[in-house]
Figure (cartoon, rainbow, N blue to C red):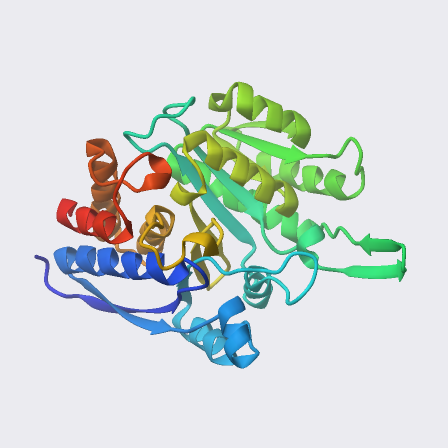
Length: 341
């Protein structure tokens, strides 16, 4: 065991539904990895989301925001958002509050999971603060609703630069900018203009552009042509779910929301209230989000050990959850990952 070097302060939002279960699993394996590599964690936990709203009328308490602002790092389980009414998305609110403009979603196959597309390895860079997700909606009259699509030069340029810098640092060879500029010539046109300008600074990286509907078809026919996907907010949300399906589902895919000085890591799946409290949830997405978090706080050894342990459990195939064809519950899977460490 390495000598203890640092205690990391991290805000924890367990979330709704299966959130507390997968969050508890994540905390257990992260602390186990930390003990092996000489790092420790101080968790600042807050109830946020639909269940918190029912209890105290707040979906995102000020104390939680203050904690994120102080810690600069947070990790959250899934939170529920009403469809068509009720309160706004807690995810959107936090992204706006802390200007978390980069939604980073790696989509990589795990060993032992049988899919139609083995060996998937791609990264999605999704602009996270504008587009239709800016939430600028009005009812013009009782029969007409209007949503404003906001695309800015600043937002487009900085997400493009994030993608190209990542590709340069990690040896990625190709970036596709995904758009609908054939129809939305001004908004998506500006996004492409910014992507092209940034791409010109990185001649060693191949740059291409695909229209979003064609991209959906291409991903189903030949996903291997994509390495890094760079796109706007709405398209990125849709495409990342599609890509999750290529490797076995949303229960496996991690996510990070990155800003200039704050980062919030999260599972990209929903709160699954139908299986909450039944020891059925798969914590892999949140655990792999924690791997991203460990890299972010410069605990690469702990991150690599934890990722290797997850992959070992999947490769052996004896302790996986039901959603991926296994037979064990959340707790048994968690114990298997800790044992694999």
